[in-house]
Image (cartoon, rainbow, N blue to C red; front, top):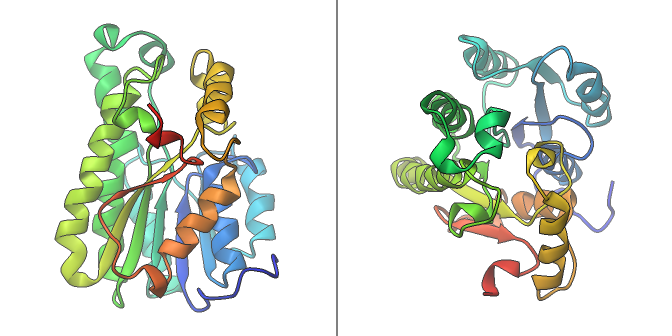
Length: 259
């Protein structure tokens, strides 16, 4: 554990969805929560992903590690049934999944098929709403929900294509969920990291150019890493941030402020 991080989340239970490997943003979040004292539950997408995620689950001492493909009916409900059975509560939810068919992602928005757009919206946005619906009854003492967005939700980023409108919808969903869940002391954040070398990002054309531009543009002069994102989320999940909700939090070295 990082000795500079105090166990301010001791007793908290966190579900982190979206770990694919040790380069995943979701893994950075899970590791930061664990460092801060929380117990974490993790999921893997399918049997192909399982060998990459299970060792990380063991490292995180995750008592719950189960499959989850939000496109398969019943799997999402099964995850929350397991959390309810094992923990009886939930304090933190991280949604760090996104998908668009490659042919729709790599073509311009004009060329995106209706089927591809609907699939991207369902997996990348509406699944967060479904998770929130299932998580909220378990957040009996309040809680914090996170969804991972990107700068391309608000500004045009070349080659981001269909994911721009989809992430814009996700950020709007976070605002509306924050409004609806606020009376239950549940806070909702859209987190917008700077570009990171993750498996999901590898599908974007000219991604290396995007990384170089981000490092040059950021006032802090360097790229962020998955632990920067994780520690930001860990802070937002603590009582220190109990009056913050509904906004998009940029973790990008300040790149979003530069024209």
